[in-house]
Length: 201
Image (cartoon, rainbow, N blue to C red; front, side):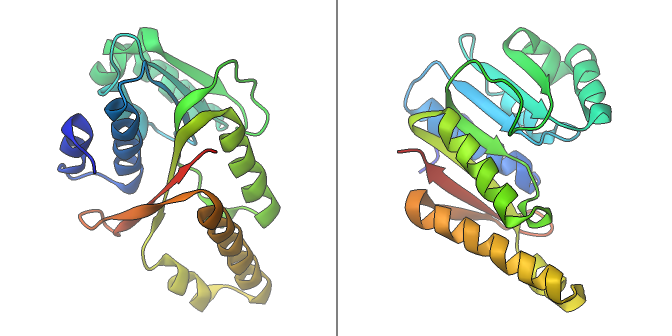
């Protein structure tokens, strides 16, 4: 059950990414750790801002983003955005692919904003394995998916795309079965979002 600051975040109108970030942070904060969080696929930073507001003085946030334009925007936001600037000394922006960027610490929580439905099945597996490899034992992985998008994609996708979507869903189901800790639903998001929770062995 979420308590405290994480639940407070989820009580606000947020998108699926910010909700995922709040839930991952709440789980780690509830166990009283000096928190190390990894965010992958930050985009323009909605989750990054949410996480920054939850960081305590001894916590750290590493943000991996592959798009150079987003990397530049995030670095600028560390100076100009109030929430990010307040925690800038505890945030690192790491440009590159999550499967390739060097990471020099283990994490208590990983928050993924990557759109797995846009990936090949083997790429999804590689990314999930990387997440699990950098988590501390018992660390929390969270990612989100929007409700209702799979049927919509099925209506417009060709045969090969539909097969890829099914294969990606199969990979996610496999990891959910092995490591899953359930999922929650953010109904106030448009569209509503599932937030999936996994735990590293």
